Image (cartoon, rainbow, N blue to C red):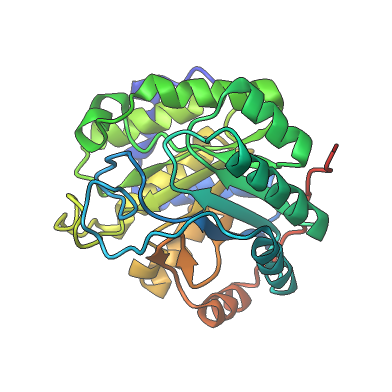
Length: 321
């Protein structure tokens, strides 16, 4: 496995003629993963809106007048009930997202730990995205049975301050370090369509592919333009940019799960198939991704059936407390 990718090396891969790029990515995908399986994940917003961060793409930011209703922390029993429904739908990983800058200490964090234990007991892999963590919080999440933690870098270090001013890149990297120290699987990716340059996309890929080890899961999101956010009027991105990002990520990080994340509902059926050809082997299923739309479950079931793809089995972490 290679961890010292240079900008020039990544640029050369990214600029490969598309059909050759897809062929190389597909070869890599088949070498490291079963071609007939896809990881299916369900994303649930356990605390919605009112976030103090000013991420320019996010309708949950308290800085913007976006059509998102604020909701407090969800009840543990409701989360576990959703996990059971997800498991019955064939989902293997449940991801819980809370609109916080930093995961809070005290009763709210204790409630999240109970959620993690409950979802793990259902037999699903458990992922959270709660904002920035301390070393001790990461340790406690691991002990509760957390499988993975999502903490995206979003874009390149150079472009980051254009999109977010309430935190800095190094704060993201510190949380990733806390996750590794606790032995938690890392889910870390980014977003395309923010107005970034091609160089920014390549720099994002470099930031991901030079982590040791590589993130176990790499979600690539397509911007979902939401009224009221600063990026609501961004032009539509050519879907082939997303395809190139996925294919390049697959080649750089061959053992990682590469996920088509937010924005999939904006793609045609054929564009989604190209994403799978590019080596993507994980998707979110369900009507919503936190607060943004996702393809209907019956559409996804029909697509996966047409492609001969089946959900891979869950490998949940065992609760230690």
